[in-house]
Length: 283
Image (cartoon, rainbow, N blue to C red; front, side):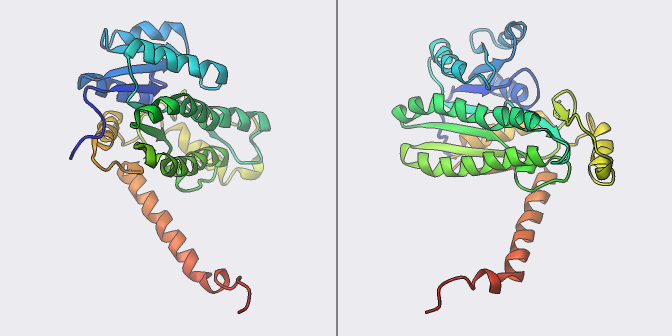
């Protein structure tokens, strides 16, 4: 395969203090690349930069602070000299039935998972377009492929990333810029631990659905089958490919979800084909 990204490359990764962001940063640093990683507080900068002095750069950024995003990108370019790959990893999970989640909780989720991603992309795109190359990696989830009872707003945020990224890939193709959507299944990150939030309201009406999800998730953290280091290696392989994938499901469980979703859509289409095809004007 012919690499589309130069090596050594400069990666700009949001959310490198833990989880996929940290694993990916460690993987690309180990191969000799540079990483500009965003963190949420000053105390996290020095530990991150100590991973590879002179090649790891910590930048303070809250992706929901729209005004600070361009400054963080400028700082990245000044310190690392370039950005070849942008990875939008920062985000969190919010679980609870639609009725249980407040407007404030839902908006905070979208401000981070969706509009935070948009802000970072907007800040980097002029630079990528001028160079006529670059690669944007947006972290979605199996929750961006199939709706799951108990996390409707989280699924909605990841479905938004899916649609945004697919459209973006078509908008940017003439500029030589690639877009890849990463769709992980269950991995042993902090997603089901400290990064997971539940709605403040818990309704007994959903005890048999969302309640069961609450019980399942309480023992899920630390038991996931997925290895974040292997996920990071898979992302590097995709970014380095001659023809990078638009979508990259990660984990056998993610592959299974995608297959079930495709089969479900096909079955639904065929069952209602006569009705779906009956809406044109009579000729």
